[in-house]
Each structure stands twice: as structure tokens, then as C-alpha cells.
Amino acid sequence: MKLIILLLSAGLSLGLNSCKTSNKVNSEEINSANSSTLELEKENNDLAMGEVQKSIPLKSIIGKKIFWIQTLYTNKTNDTPNNHSAYLIFREKSQLEVQSICNKGAGQFSLTEKSISININMMTRIACKDATIEYHFFKDLNNSKKAYQIGNKIFIILKENVGTMEFEVSN
Image (cartoon, rainbow, N blue to C red; front, top):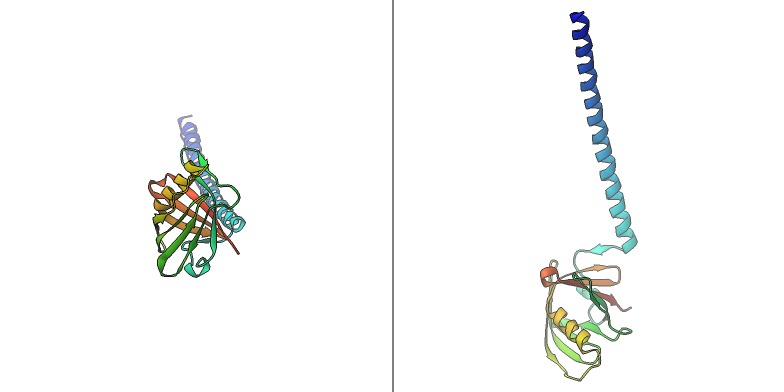
């Protein structure tokens, strides 16, 4: 009787171990399948959004109007101008022109693969109905940190990750 119990418990032990191995293989297969699914989803999202460019080719934006679409802040607020009323024009020799809702500005920019820096150092001072949005526009440009491009959209990440400015390149 003791021998039968020992054999049964040995068989159960072997059976349990083989189940654990089987479960381990199954969970490895599941993890592999999940990983493949995530990679496919990422590829599909990238295709749906357009090609993400790590750096913005300067030649593709020099002399073009880059219209400000909106700025989304991490505190869940946003600034949005009216009807393409604000834009940037990147010029040769790191010069920048800015048209805001009511005012114009000029300054310099630096664009590398990993960062963007904008310094608006000249500006008109015309009274503006949307003064708060205009103030944020200039302030955010001066606080730019990183930039990337997806299709004809340019996104500028602000310093301290307080938000993201979205622009659209004109044709």
C-alpha cells in the first residue's frame, strides 16, 4: 500500500512538473506572441501617422510657412490660434521670422538631431485681443527643447515637458 502511494505521489509529482514546464512554454509562447503583436501595432501606428523622422531636414522647412495648430499642455489645457493666424518661417543662417496672432517677431534658431532652440529677441508690441494666447506662443517658442516631424506635421516638445506645440508645414 505504501509502495502504491509512493508511486502515485511520484507520478503526480512528475505530472505536475510536466504541467509546469508546459505552462512555462505556453507563457513563453504567449509572451512572444504579445511582443510580436505590440511590434505590429507600433508599425501600424507609425504607418497610420506617417513616417516619424528623428530629425527635421532643414532643407525641407527653409522658407516655408510653418503654421501653429495648437499647444497641448500636460495640465490638460491647450492654446489654439484662429485660422492659421500664427506661423514660423525658418530662414538661412539660423534666422527665424515669427507671425503671431497680432504681432511679428524675429530671432535665431538652432536645430540638431536631438534638440531645437529658439530665441525670439525682437518683437512688435501691438495690443491684441488674444493677448494670453499670444504671450504663451512666444514664451513656448523660447522654451522649445526637442522637435520631430511626422509627415507634414512638426512637434516641438517644451522644456521640462510642460507641453507640446503642433505645427503644420505649408506646401
